[in-house]
Length: 103
Length: 324
Image 1 (cartoon, rainbow over the protein chains, first blue to last red):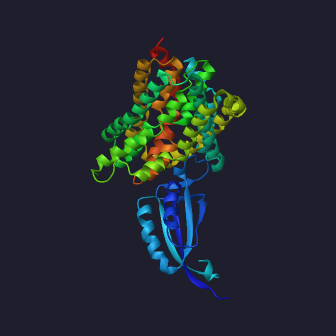
Image 2 (image 1 turned 180 degrees about the horizontal axis):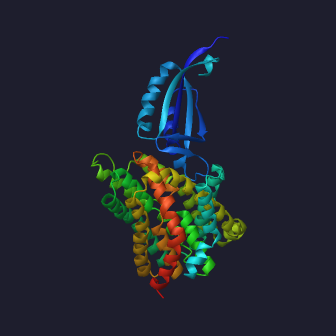
Image 3 (image 1 turned 120 degrees about the vertical axis):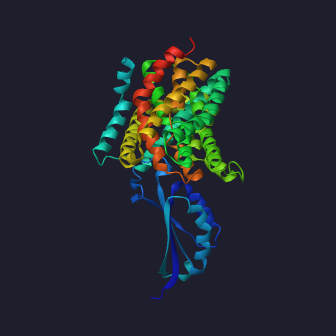
């Protein structure tokens, strides 16, 4: 089967700043993104869990966005000032998709 | 002493202790996060709605307006005192000190619910509009802390509070729920209260106990993770600050002429520290601050201190301070 090269951007970020990131993504001509809850993990300050958290401050979310490689750099440039001071991780990876026209 | 024992043996305190004990013993007991969030929304809805109904029943009285203005003033001033104390007592960075100061200037809805529950058990009435005062004291501390942080960092350029930040803080979900329920309470008055009474009043003690169980679990696990931040100086601050807030509130309550119950509630509000609205706002406004320090102090030290020792103490003091 023929597959096509794309860039997958993963942004793991604190829940309170979700709308800042999605508003920025919305300003780009991309086909979409998905937001997933992160259940638990461990970072510089030890382990944490979403269980029982009453405030959004203790929650982490992951945004997954698959875009054409030509758009990835501009998106990362726009996202960087938002996530720079926050807790989280931004990664990109090369992936292949089966529907070229969907992205 | 009777008041302290009665408080210690109340279901609320015992469920909180159960959560703390379960977390300390590393039990897998937990409240699902969606349920925890629902409980927080329920709590804010009840407090806001009941406050609105009381305003609808009693109208805009001098006591209501004066106490709201006093509450807003306290919410602005307490962060300044807290910041000053933290920078003198500890080696925390200015941004961490400002973030913690915001938590202590704002209020804890659960502590508010706990003090009103204790007053109900004791048969001590309080001014119904205190929920409106709680709502008014929620956000000024956030802006006060932002101003402190900007001055501490020597930032002079740009607006004091950026408009997008103002919008994000004002539209924070918990603040919208509290103020929205308050407005609905005013609009529907006694008719609305009668329709919702089984949900708002009869179920409230049970839901509050479940909420406190969750708080105990979160506080216990937070203390386990955040122990490294608990230097004697910051723990001392977390115990001293409630007394300062309560003392200022007692003075203002006496000047306004609040009842014994109203004075106890006002003292408790000023003595409490936020862990619902402010932590989220601080992640937006002061992302450089370490959220674990403020949350460990407010939820792990000040909240249990107020629940177990503070509330009975504030009620006892209110009996001697309040206007006859």
